[in-house]
Image (cartoon, rainbow, N blue to C red; front, side, top):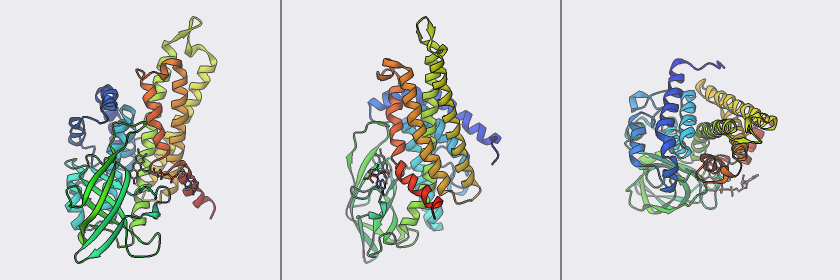
Length: 379
Ligand SMILES: Cc1cc2nc3c(=O)[nH]c(=O)nc-3n(C[C@H](O)[C@H](O)[C@H](O)COP(=O)(O)OP(=O)(O)OC[C@H]3O[C@@H](n4cnc5c(N)ncnc54)[C@H](O)[C@@H]3O)c2cc1C
């Protein structure tokens, strides 16, 4: 792996950091209070090309590599973790399955609007009784003439409140747990499809998380993505890519927390000296810097493996596992460095501490990541 970013990757990193500092950080606190980012900001991100980073140009995207994608999500998350996941889901979780498994007709039908941000995407795998055990999907799809009739509820769906195009996983008539699942694209406005309860969350509060409800919702056969019964494979391959995005989100949050901790340690004085003069705090910062660097390297490794066309399930799981848990430790240490002020909402580190927590849970919990890694270690 070449550790040096190429010119285009460096540009992505620098331009997105600048955007994060100028536009995202200043609005993050208010967006959290409003439980949502300003639609105008989302439109601006779309206009800047952030919605179709890896999508080929012929479908309206930028056709950039996974390293650029990871850098972009990390830098967006440096500014606002809610924006990081919102953009990550519309890119990797929605467009990737259509790109990897869709027909040419389906790509032309759905990708251009998603890649240009005219429409936003969502990915609906989780259900109230099917979380880590995602093959436990109970939302049903029954063939009726030229359509599948879908019934059931998906929960915890990112972008649920405002997205237009969802990749949804349903159970068909096959008995087999894993081979009984199929993937469909569902568009907002389809009769029988509605948005359910909005979740009141601990962190990433500006990102939208809702239920999706299906009541005798008729989906045309043409909306089936991949093979009938091939949905579990669609979901797992998609999540291999998505996890690079969540690792990047965790890394971006951790980097922001680290920068704030360094700044605070230099400014805050106790016992007539800045906190940074105490060796204990220096060692704390040294540990944080080391974990941040390890997280960056694993992230770059996973993205690089994807760019090489290598099977990257293990690398993506390692990256997500490590980055999210390191981000937990880094945010904890950054808050501790701030003392009582870190516990006060006025200080950004308080939000980072809460925003970070979800990175250890969604797109596969830390335990699920250990299962994936163990699966390739213990054969
Ligand atoms: C804010 C938010 C956004 C989300 N966005 C989406 C989205 O866009 N799309 C989507 O489909 N889902 C989404 N999710 C769902 C998320 O992916 C699930 O919450 C996650 O996969 C865990 O499932 P669960 O909550 O049902 O926990 P459970 O599966 O019930 O797990 C509970 C605990 O048990 C552990 N556990 C479970 N099984 C095992 C095992 N075999 N061995 C060891 N430990 C185990 C888990 O690791 C966890 O610690 C989101 C969730 C949240 C909170």
